[in-house]
Length: 426
Image (cartoon, rainbow, N blue to C red; front, side):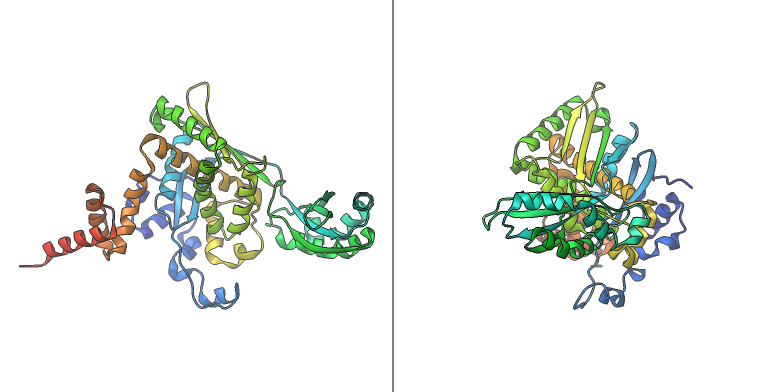
């Protein structure tokens, strides 16, 4: 059964009702998503086997972004985040792209790079050539470490060698280019690097030091584009202003840092929900933003021939469906089931699309109304809860502090006290 990501009125339902609607939209039995409920998610015993010195658990809200069509397929997208407005903004941006086919994606493949550092080579340029001459041998030795990966069509595809001047002297750096298929790939490439390091040292007639993957995953790029309807955005002036804001972020690293943070609001939320490595993905994306010598925007916005806004995004995404927390964490497993993706490449496509949608939503808010209006309206519910409002009181308190434009905890406490006073019999 195909997923239907267009669920009207989702925000007006209770969490349990939303879970039922989301399961129905995804063509799943609600029990398949039970791990998304706190009482059925990660246990303390399970956590104790995941990391060291476990003393407890920390819950992060998981919301579901709706309205997404990605490569012709509807997706309901789990997002783990503590920040108000992120899920709603992504859903709204996806709605604006939906009438124009949603998001289209492409990928450069599933290749990760392992690095082996060679120190103290007497003849570094000749060492580079000796290592390249032995590339077939090194590739075969590395592939022996993971026959299962090779049987699935993965493994080492290439060996490259760089001569690198450093303040500690000239070093020779060997790169293994490894197709990791549906894994994030860290364990596979690190094992290969460790295994071939002694042979590299023999060929180089010196010693090796670091043997580890790089999170600069420049050979594992995911690209996405979407057309956002000019009328739904607010008209031609809003389109032009978003283009101007995008150009600002491309040219200025100060603006680019915040522009890219908006992209990562979407990307990190999906990476976290699916049990993938948020730090690795963030490191890769930010390194890509500086690939041309200056930190710049990861996305671009332009106006097409019909006057609509076209967004484009290219990011390295080292994510997987096998191994790590993706397999060990029950909530991550439920998130993967909800997404309905079968490959790491499909997962990366979803993540990139959410990043672009979130970025567009932030740019539109800045260009059309200022970021605080929409963000602080949603933030008001958090402020009301922080002031001590119960579930039944949060809506009224939030509405009042927004109307009065005083979205602060101390004022929320005053409103709450006033509200409770009116309920108390004289």
